[in-house]
Image (cartoon, rainbow, N blue to C red; front, side, top):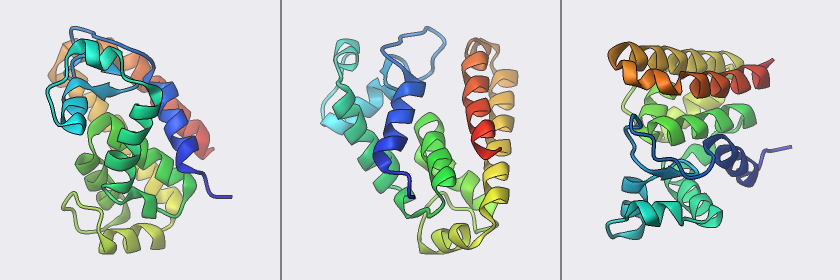
Length: 171
């Protein structure tokens, strides 16, 4: 049974949680993981922290559906677990970085665009290996992020829990 985008979006919203405005968070104020910059771009006008705090779960789902699933083409990933991981990477790290990591993991040319060649490489690969490589790239990224900016260690427990959830999904 194919995992629906709704299930993916529910998991993202659960992981991201409610309104947060942590001083070390490079994304600034967020709710459901939607940053002030993302909300501004989505609405086509500058958003305030109060706008972010007031975003509904339904609007957050629409943003993620359009900008993080359909827009980059991740809805074309056939394997359910891999698609869920890629979308979560896109939400947490941006769609282009998620696409680059996925391309590297699948042995495709790396350009940060999930086009037909990447889709073919990903969907034709042994998805368990691609999944593990993508998860490893994400883990290394978190390590480099914390090593390069110690203030980011404030988020290590949450990032580790997020990784663990995907490791358990693979088991």
